[in-house]
Length: 453
Image (cartoon, rainbow, N blue to C red; front, side, top):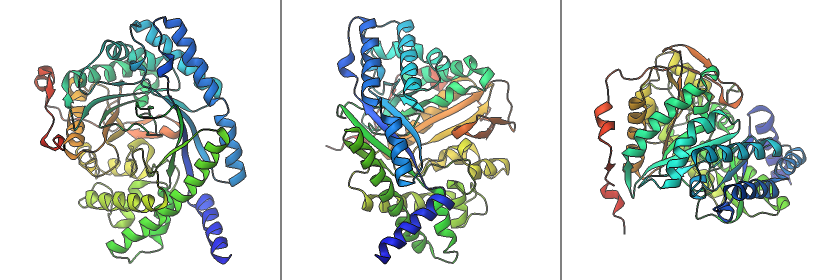
């Protein structure tokens, strides 16, 4: 009984003082059976299926949140990549479908719906191209629709024709929402090696290997890890790893209990636990501050990648012991606009775009929520994507790019996105051109690592 009481009191402390929360419960819904040669019929089927399955998602999550006392910050939906079901739909119809998804999300009260997506890492189908053409307008006229595009995998290489298009798409999406500082780009992520069960936005979609419906959970706790490390200021790095492992175990166990309760009450299967440490702008809820507690004067200085690798590995080891169904991305996110420590590192000239790119070799995802100067070219955006895709392809890991060229803003200015998206200092890019590289097109072949059979 004493142990149970101690654990209960520790959980209460983590919630009240250390920002422990369930970052998201995300319902994945298959839309394959909604495909129809008549667009209006398909459009209606999509809306009705989403509303039918997720009708009680928000209410049940809120009831469980109150009952157990653990905040569930976001309620989300992920769906089959839309490019796989739109068939011969036109660009205008694809935009209409995005508005339908947005309508469903608003009606259900969920924060985001992800899966307005295309998987084009080896080639581009007619449906894929229609969705790509629709993306800038679709993201600018909707509020809660999120999109992801897969342009590379370790098994296929990098589709540079798709990479070239994505630079243009990001640039246009930013211009279409220039009165909101390019906000549409915050809902768009470009992937290498995407996973099919990721509960986090903007990259969530319900993959082809998934079932009819499932509930995936993303738990977060940078503040809990930071607090735990502060209680061991003289620990060596092996002991630091052990502290993070034990803390990740507790966070994951709490999250899985909540996730399973929500799934059971909704009558849907429980899917996976995503272990990712996802920061917020709340005080002491920062991945960067964890790295600084490990021993860096400021994130971005020499030793940053070693500290991040230690932390990422320890989070995975601890979480894997707490759950049999670990999935998603699982590790540590480094979204600049959502992490006060990252913002401070940039403003102090310790953290650069090149260093952030290097950090993606050992963290969960990639260049995330980074504000760039408004005059950045489409070719440079494509080159950033190509670099990240190469890191993911060679290292057999997921990497991604979610950058926001902010129209009219210059390096050093601060942009306020608001809410969970936070704020970001505008960063500059290398002034030299990558235009010829991007213009070549074609496909960068898969690396030797792809030959694993």
